[in-house]
Length: 202
Image 1: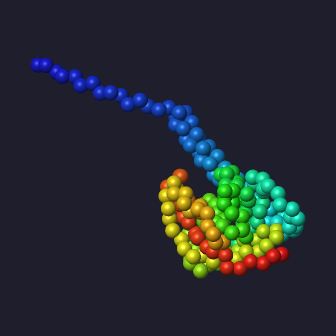
Image 2 (image 1 turned 180 degrees about the horizontal axis):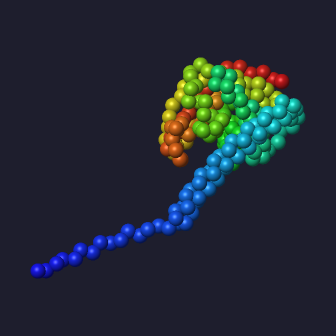
Image 3 (image 1 turned 135 degrees about the vertical axis):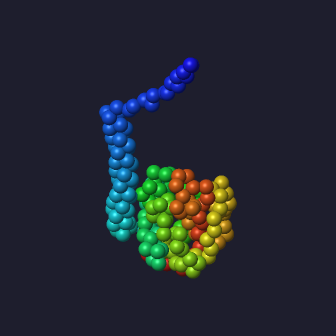
């Protein structure tokens, strides 16, 4: 009689020390991620509070000058959405973490042309998901107060740059990533187009 011997592979047994180490690594990574996210949010809120307070006492410039990257140029408000934020020159990601950025190649607020402002969809521009045609947007600079009325909203691919086109009218374009709930680098951009309806000098 022939007996067949079946050999079974033994499953390696992880030591309790190894499992504890892996668990600790996951927990530590999670704590770091939450801590960093909280720091970014708190830093942005502190920056907004300080710069808004400084902007309220900022005197108009008597002579034109070249704007520096990160320099505060004004304040944007959308009352119905409770949006109130500092606008700075430039659109670097580090700037958009704490403020609304003015795209340097576009017109300045109050000038003829297309004024383009960008913000993160999960931060200061998150309320844009609820914006409607007819909503009023205010932009204050040290020298003037401007009022815009929303005309349209639409979505374009991130590669479509004609939303920054020049214009012979006084227009405002707000840009943020889309979809609003997307995780990671969003493929599209949500666009708000408005035109200037009023202004007055300070």
